[in-house]
Length: 350
Image (cartoon, rainbow, N blue to C red; front, side, top):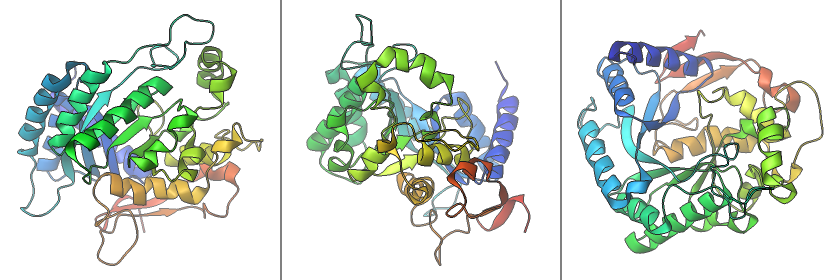
C-alpha cells in the first residue's frame, strides 16, 4: 500500500495535471480515508490549486446504519478543514458517494430486462427499502447525494429513492446528482427535471470509436437499448440540468476530448463522420456550461466561480482556439495555454 507521503505527492501530480487541462473545480468521487487525509495535508499546507469537493464513500447496502457511519466520518473531516470562519474553503466535505449498481460490461449493472441472450439482468447493490433508508437519512441530515447508477433499473431505483426522500424530508436545495447514466429508460428522462436531480455524464464514453462500446456493450444490451445509451441531448431537451465529468483515472480527464464526443457522438479524432445516436447530440455551449456554470452550481460555488463576473474569483483559462467556431472534429486538439486559480497562474503563463 502507498504511504501517506506517496499519496500526497500523487495528489500534487494529479492537481498539476488538472490545472494543465484547465480544471480549477472538481468533485473527488468515492474518497476513502487515506485519500481524504492527503487532501487535508495539502489544504493545511495551502497547496491546493483547485477547489476540491470530496464525496466520501458510503455503502448503500447498509441502509440507515451505513448512513450513520458516513455521517460520523463526514463530521470528523469537516472539523479538520483549515480556513477562515465564514469563508468557504477550497476543500469541502458535503457529499456522499453511493454505488447503486455495477457496470454493463460486467453484467452487474441493474437492468429492467435481462441482458441480451441471458437469463439475468444484473443486480442492484441494495433493495429499494434499504436504498431509501440510506438516501433519506443523509438527505435529512443535509448532505448531498452523489450516486453511481449505470443500468436502467439502477437509475430508476435511484430516481425513485431520491423522489421518496424529497417527499419524506421536504424540498430543499439538495443538488443531488447521478453519475454515469449509461442506459436510461425513455420513461425516466424527464424525471431529472421534475425532481431536480442533476445528470452527471461522462460524455467521452458515448462513441463507437471505442471497443468498450462496440464489444462490451452492444452485444449485451440488444438493439433497442443500444439507442438509450448516454442520452445527453434527450435529458437536456427535457429540461434536465447537465454536468460533465471524467471518472479519471478510469479515462482521461481532458474536457475537450469529452466535449468533442458530446457534440459529434464520434471520435475524439479528426475524421468527420455521421453521429452515432444523433438524437442525443448537444451543442458546444451546453457542454461548456456543464463544465463551468453548472459545475459550480453542483458544488455550491456558483457565487464564487463558474462564470466570468465582477466580484467572482479569477478562476480563468486561456485556450489556443475559439471552441465555439472551430470544427467540431478538432475540439479534441484544444490546448490550454494558461490556467489561473484565485487570480494566480497555476499553469502556463501570461
